[in-house]
Image 1 (cartoon, rainbow, N blue to C red):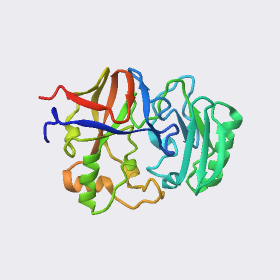
Image 2: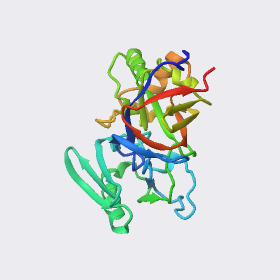
Image 3: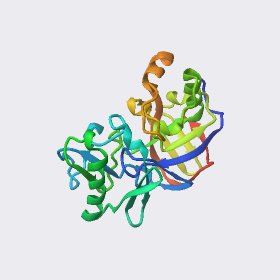
Image 4: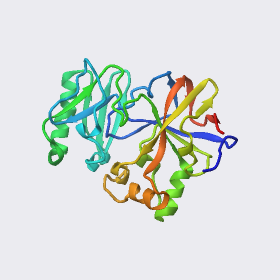
Amino acid sequence: MTDNKHQPIELTKITRYPVKGLSPETLTSVELVAGATLPFDRAYAIENGKSRFDPANPKYLPKVNFLMLMRHERMAKLKTSFDDHSQTLTIELEGKMVARGVLDTSEGRRAIEDFMVDYMTRELNGAPKIVHGMDHSFSDVSAKCLHIINLKSVRAIEKFSGRTVDPLRFRANLIIDGPDAFSELDWVGKTLASDKITLKVFKRTQRCPATNVDPQEGVRDMTIPDLLFEHLGHRDFGVYASVKSGGSLKEGAKFCLQGAE
């Protein structure tokens, strides 16, 4: 991999996922806090069947406990919006509002759950239940972190596959551009810095079949993990980073890589 210490690293998009498995929201700016995720990123999830999550003692659970794209691709057809202040989730399907509920009320959660009973009937293992824990994030990893992907790596997958690839397939929080394709996989143990903000990269992202789902159409039309293995010999794409020092982060921000050999 190429050393990117002196290459420009530009933040092109900030995205969060207020409800695990549902659609992303784009933010133009965000306040990062040390040791935290993006505000409301994966703050809620929808349990699929018997409840195992304890909101009074929130702990990491594997994603198979929840409705998620790896197994439930039709969720990608649902377009959602979330209001931080009122905790209101709105769901649209094919341009029409199909459900709305205030997630910190039992009535509001029930409105969303009732819709999921109808929409996800074939995929349910029992009654769906919206869950939330104070300061808990339903990420695919137990650490509170941000997920980062590199647009040049996305373009490399486009060359591998001979087709356009939507970066939203990878459900990242920060989408960057500038570094050589896949060079970010060598950043584990290194730091990204922008003004007062520092992000410590601690893990590569191992890709699952959720990336095979078209994020707009809700159908499986690619085999991303297999494509990665065919061309790279592994199924890693993107990295996780923890916020070591926070501050205001805006789209277009420039990062520098620190700690490179």
